[in-house]
Image 1 (cartoon, rainbow, N blue to C red):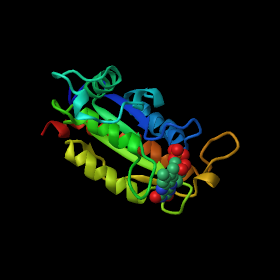
Image 2 (cartoon, rainbow, N blue to C red):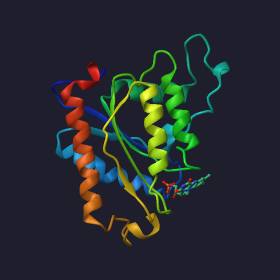
Image 3 (tube, rainbow, N blue to C red):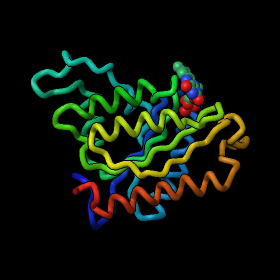
Length: 193
Ligand SMILES: Cc1cc2nc3c(=O)[nH]c(=O)nc-3n(C[C@H](O)[C@H](O)[C@H](O)COP(=O)(O)O)c2cc1C
């Protein structure tokens, strides 16, 4: 399935962090809200879906992949769009996210023709700016259309209140707008071009 011009776009939302207290996973909530407001059907995938063996060509036996990789690939294949919360590790994306991208890119590349938005937060001042650039390069390689705008949230340790909600309504608004944009992009059919 690729992007659809009509009907309800199917979206997946996930974070490139496995840890329970992930700041990035919290951001998904807002992008999901925006996507649902715009009429998208969103499924959030937890860390269990991104817990895949490290990519190893020897594990690709006769067109079959390890079981968790098959599940991951099927999820990606069946969606129209993606909401990706990406942390920043050493100015790049996390190994977890890169590994998940690599597995799903193996022939047939199940990313092809999807639309995506990515965003992120870090305790530092750059708010994942460098990893977002890195992620865009990887998503282009696998033929994913990425919404040009991103949302970067610096100083993650001060950005959330005691309930774990984002304090700044402008950040909430920006994330929900990004969620809506992915649904619109999926509906536009641009990824079919
Ligand atoms: C190996 C490693 C490298 C990191 N490199 C960076 C970095 O380059 N820039 C940055 O802003 N934060 C960096 N951090 C801090 C992460 O942004 C921080 O751990 C963040 O909370 C991870 O996202 P999460 O909360 O969603 O798990 C790094 C953390 C780790 C574990």
